[in-house]
Length: 197
Image (cartoon, rainbow, N blue to C red):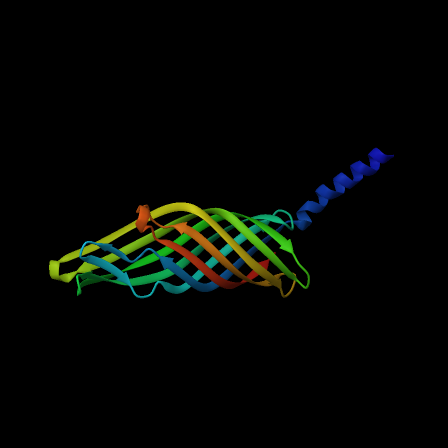
C-alpha cells in the first residue's frame, strides 16, 4: 500500500511540473555606467564626458520550477562621446557604442506580499564599436570588438497580477575588451515590466 501511495505522489509531481513551469518576456529601461573609457598614453589622452547613459533591454526566460530558471537578454547600453587631446589641445573626438547579449541561470526566492528576490549568473557577450576622428592629422578610426565575460545580477520583483510584474535589478557585465589595465567595464541598473505566460 505504501508503495502505491509513494508511486502516486511521484507521478503527481511529474504531472504537475508543466503547470509549475512558466515562460516570461519583458522590457526594461535604466542607467548604465562605464569605467575604463578614459585613457592616457604619453601626452595623448582620451576623455569621456558622459560615462553614465540611458540603457534599454529586452529579456525572456523560462522557470523550470518556481525557484530555478534560465534567462536571455539583449541590452543597448548607450553611446559615450569622448575627446582626444594632445597635451591641453583638443585634436579630435569620437564615440563608443556599447551593447551586450547574455544567457544566465536564475534563482528566485518568493517573499511575502507578492515580492520575490532573484539572482542570476551567466555569460555575457559584450560588444563595443568605436568611431573617432583626428582632423588635424587627417585620421579617422573605426573599430569594433567583442569579449565574453562572467555576468552577475540581483533584483527584486513585485507581482501586480499572476501574469504582470514590475522588477528592478542591478547587473555587472564584466569586461568589454582585453586591454589589461585599460579594460572597459559596464554595470547597469534598470526597472522593467515582465509578462508571464
